[in-house]
Image (tube, rainbow, N blue to C red):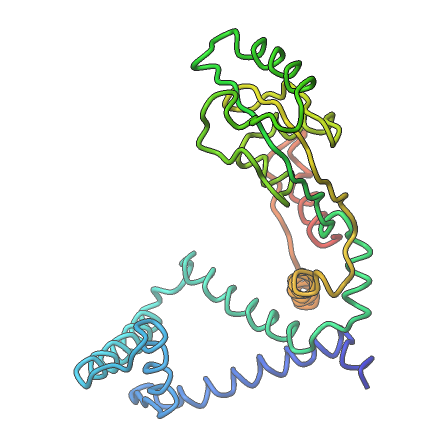
Length: 295
């Protein structure tokens, strides 16, 4: 049974049924063009939309305003349609396309991904879910603004002092003030990059844990760095990143569902693209069409 539920053809048939169902409802509602009927469900939808936006129920006056706006919107829609104002309107065309694609996306999300599907996606895209290394380190800062060209040299001289000093040395009293923490625990390279810049992270790759090293350049100046703990990066188990993987699988499903929808509908049309011009541009239209439908 579950195999049938996951069949793409079944999804498309369900989408088609949904489209015809919606069309049937709309057609019934529009039998009498001179009647505007505001159903109980439509009124509840107006109230629910208002409540989600304002976190409270509308007052009686606000409720009357909601009804008035809904009726005006319906009148405007029918009048502009009868006047032909919707023809060749790019905004309306895009809005209708969005509605069609939303139907396809809803069908794609009807069945939750199985563990097997999620595991296969995780294994096929390891780089997207890899867990970064975790670092804990001390950093001692030497300001270019304060020391000028001597900043790097001063950092190198201080490195020699730190290397020969005992464990009792109060290293935090050395160097220059910086608004960032002198000690960072259990952080990632991307987190360090946001604080110190990408150059700092790149140079940190050459730093060995367990001793003061440097100087290491950042967007602020120069640093001496002591890495006192390091956890290597790794590929996670599905349970650790299930939510992220499921989100990506559903995104892929929705895209594939929209692609299938247009592929199935396109066979009902003869598509011709007029060439842009003579010579090298003559086949441009056919090339674009071929690229789109070949996917």
